[in-house]
Image 1 (cartoon, rainbow, N blue to C red):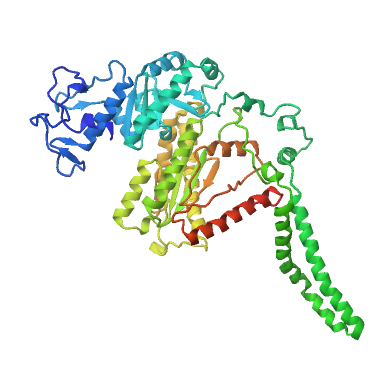
Image 2: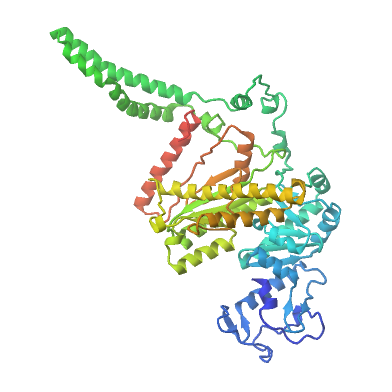
Length: 579
């Protein structure tokens, strides 16, 4: 496991004292003596560069020297304890805790900036759960090193109160120094700022997931206030609370009438075209007095439906060319062009990302998508939110053993939950429905809801048995309860469904496709949009086109797709319902 491997995977040179410095370990050069270097064990899996030296040793030495040069380990951090029986340099409980968290690499930081932050803010506030550094960065605070298993992994950092250190980890070994360096710079700016004390005193120390904060004066100047037509100044006399919310929202987001007016013009154009046909019938009747031809009027209703499409095309094409475009850059009842104000008084809703997949390539399709989700998750969790990712894998049970194991390992290493339903026709299981992707998602949701039902039943029983209320319920209790309920739900499925990880569903569900690229800072806006518009249930995001080959045919399809996306956004901003 990254830097830990250097300290535990092979024996060190005989120590001269009980706590030798790492600089006293055998050199990695060719001149190093081979007497104390053992060959790698058979099946170890590491790449041996020289006798007794592997790639992990080289990378760990590089990381250690980089961190030491920056002063991140403090005065005494270069000292480690030795196991007297095995002569190995060990890291004690830290290695076990990091192993439960399961990153690729982790380091402890005890730099001067960390020490000042611990002394002035963490030690001074025993109930503080997060240290608010700036609008986009906050770091969780854990009581002990053993609590690292409860940390939000996507934050990639956590203060340990008892040791007064900052633990930083990464999913890629080569990213650890850059990640720690960025946090160090943010921490220095926070300490130097005069607003540090005010920022933390104005926060609720008991809330582990609290809303974002922005020091920008312009941001706060744009918050709703009395008399500006905001929801705070909207007073509606209505007994139905749901109707009151909708009416208040309509005052903030008026309904655009451009599209309804254009649709009316298209209908009028269709009526005019049909009237020309009726006119021809009347003229013929005046000549021969034969009323039988009026039977053709029976086809007028279906003809109206067919004529409406070209009429809409003509009218909306003219609207695109000569009509107004201001609505395309404004918020309305069915369209959002302006990002919501990041109101610090609103809670950040927990988000669940659901990704349905089948037999797509892990390296070419699934991994880039989940990596983009992971970056967005890191940004949102450092802003104070919570995100979990669920892969609804319909092809996992159909793959060969080797490829299946690679997928499961990737999900596990990146803290991604997955649900895989049985193949069609196996043990009587049927994948019903025409749209298999919807059935895939529904199967995952059904299992998640069953887990929640079992947890509700067990939670009540646990509170009755212990005689303690929910205020004594800890996060560790919740995780143990989830593990038990999760195992029971899988037993009820008769082991037909494969699942692992966190499959609980949050307040917001983001549905993405297997080849989606998620913007890094989009979860905050989605949470604010939902919080500020409680009457909204579904938001459809405008998407772009991902090109790979950039040849003539792909460019043509991309051009056509972009036109469709722009047309959907334009019609939605003009007042039509979402497509």
